[in-house]
Image (tube, rainbow, N blue to C red; front, side):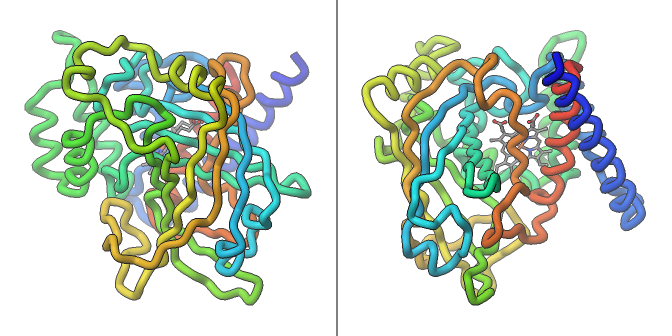
Length: 337
Ligand code: HEM
């Protein structure tokens, strides 16, 4: 009970901080979309599940470790790349606020990682299995939620509203097209996950390098076939991951691309050219997985702006917006709301 009370206080503190952050934003631009608006829209579209995440509600916890390479240490002084193993708490998930969304749904899958660095420092990496995101700024994300809200009479989104949304939001099309053309993975273990945003690596000499990263599965990329999409049950991803880890560790290589002049820093809807210089920055090893209820990943807020010295954000408006949005969802669920 004491833990819940303390956790609730932390939640309230974050909420207060979020509101302060937003009033500063509101001062800068009257029309700014707020985190409150977006989290309320998530609730409007998917309903409220008290105590649960407002997005990526359905998920599975996992544990493991990460070992960085000496090559990565040339570009970033983060303790993540010290070469020593650091322990990791992971959460795999499906996008959206529906806790019962079928695992065959053609929406995004998520991989969220919390790295425990020496001295109590943390690094978060929170990714999707799509190389781009479906919004260049928060307004598009908000408008998508409003357009996909089920009509109370049919219980389904109004196709006309979705058509109008697509026609007016071209920045949504690249991710939507990727999800349409690529079936979902057969297992959380057989998917790549992309950082999507551009980040800065800062090394011991304070040299800044613009990077993007992805985690590539050593089990290979395996997607459901069209027949499996129709025949697979609603819940298989969690059990498949638990069984896979019982056979032995599951690994991903962290691959980093180095940006070149002209590569976008602030637009997560555009991929960088595929011929960028790349290197392996480390290996993630997941050794066990378990249902999220009461497990280690459940209470974590995988805020993507929790970073260690040596890794820093760019001014990508989506990346910067995520932090207050996650704080809103986190504060509500910690309070049992
Ligand atoms: C406007 C942009 C976005 C908004 C408003 C948003 C909002 C949210 C919210 C409210 C949560 C639940 C937080 C919690 O209660 O702990 C969440 C979870 C998540 N989001 Fe986002 N998100 C956005 C963009 C992205 C992007 C670009 C990525 C990937 C690069 C991403 C990946 C994830 C993942 C993987 C989770 C699940 C984290 C976990 O397992 O706890 N999101 N998002």
